[in-house]
Length: 96
Length: 402
Image 1 (cartoon, rainbow over the protein chains, first blue to last red):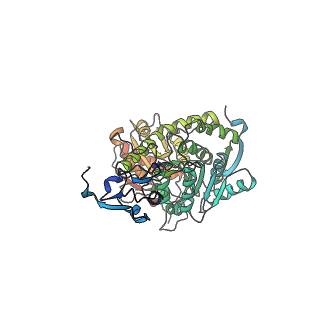
Image 2 (image 1 turned 90 degrees about the vertical axis):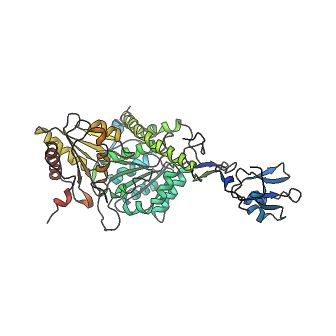
């Protein structure tokens, strides 16, 4: 058996006080949200709508997806009132 | 210290005994929907609630499916919960039962055994319990009204134990035990509270607290799912010895004990052993006593725990016997024998190559009479002496009235 534990407790319980981050949803991603920091007005809508709750608050200035968990659904880009988040194909990145 | 001196002796039905058992454990939430032959439990609990003896949130739901969802959610919110059902009702809450066990909610439920939908049979049979075999629930079976009361109390110790956290279903034969009144010693609330107080000393299980939200029923796909299934199966394994231990503690507190996972009745030097469960065991014991007087070394293993299946103890007690008969109060569709027979016979590699016979009797209120028990013992005896024998015998069919 793998030594990695996905759940700390006995059941399918997760800590909703922090983030609901316990699945390897990052591996599902084919499109990556890229935040144009200068356009971001820190309204927080992307973080509110993000299904995996993976938007990281960057010092109260802007938000950025945690790519370990971002599944590339594009909800943040759709909801951003400033159009500051652009979905780009994963193939354009060579960081993996 | 036992409660014996302070026990209130009553003559009550099995259903009332279940209600007393539940009431004495002081549940926080009771959600139930009526169904024959279980309804009396609900009536009784509402009486307790009205009189102030039971201080619980009583939720009269619109169906069994809701009942199970209400108690599951309440249990995960930290409450002690109770529900009761039977047959159709059990079938109607099946998906919610899977959710209860999957989320490891320590629900305690009484299931009054009754035949299942299709052929309208308002009659006894364990088919409903059998159909939930792989639901991940712990399943217990009681023989008498007293045992019903005690088993409900034990069920809370088992379900809510920090090392277990698995829902528990207490089964007993509808119509026979549900409506039959027997002498029952009802322990004082204080003794039951003492018995359950062990749970308070354990670490706090995961519950929903105000201001501290947690995700329940979270995704666990691939390895996450494997991990949780493995944990659940391990907990079921632990439940067996835990149940034996709780049974011993019951003796200290209440002055009664039943043998834990199985009751071994005159099996020690027995050559012929019947394996059975539920109310029919009273009759079987009487017949065994009679045959013992005649010099036949026979005994009974009474299954008190259906899931997890107590195979270790069964192997221990059945090893060295000359013939075994397994009595099922249900049928095994597509199985060559009753469901419990199939499980017992699967152990033969561990206890030796001896004749094992399957008897189906008592389904749909066909009484398991003393005559039937004599026949079964005779047939197992003949098989043990080398005669050819059928694997499966429908005792209730062959003895059917014209």
